Length: 313
Image (tube, rainbow, N blue to C red; front, side, top):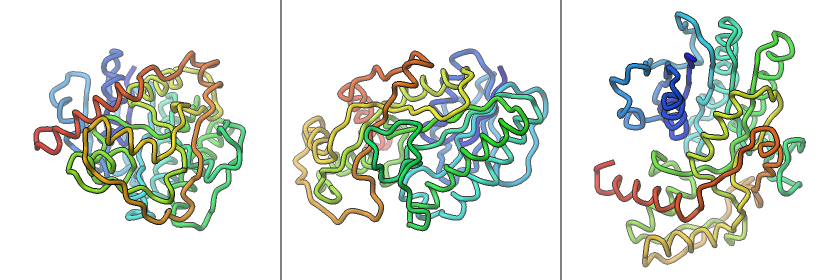
């Protein structure tokens, strides 16, 4: 297939391009480098089935030729990024999603949008199932991201119902691995950066809040399977192994042999207390579940960040 991927120079987007090419497809990659990095796709320069176009999907654009699939992964994804670019985040979830859906409709292509577990907000249901409508603050500091993704999901379903576009919606939970930005403010790169530099490791609140961490190759495998499926409603993709942030910090410290102390800072506003996916739907419909252990995934991720620190990644 010939597949358009927006957000292709992002952390997960670049790995998705790798997977699509490995499966034999052709990729037309789109990114405006607001938060993505050329380094993430540099290894694809010269690939015969890879084409890159620097553009902003919130502005009008065209793609010539046949298109079989549209994968919309464009959006700032870390709190640091979407708090710095709140309007751009809302624009890419609304105008950008509309442009990508129009492309899929025009080309009679299948369409996959990467949504987020943030649609559940600070959840009152645990673990989170796709039928849960969420507990989201629509005017809080995180709302630019939460609501852009919730709108993107609604728009995707509208295009499916009104125009018959073959749509898929993935709700992505915490994902980690090589090519994450060192300074994006998310817990994995933050802890690794601090540990590798011997700095105090910052835990917000008491550290009792929970997260679950999915390695990027597992996540991309779920996205690929979902893209080929006929499921139109949202599907959770993430690792159901839940741990507290404090436990995770201690895990990082042990694996990096860091001497860093753990320090506690106030919890950010609207920070979810619990986050764990129910992946029963993905198991049943896609035959998918994570396979990479936290230890193996962190080993790869630590090696990548060590390379970043050494200036070679």
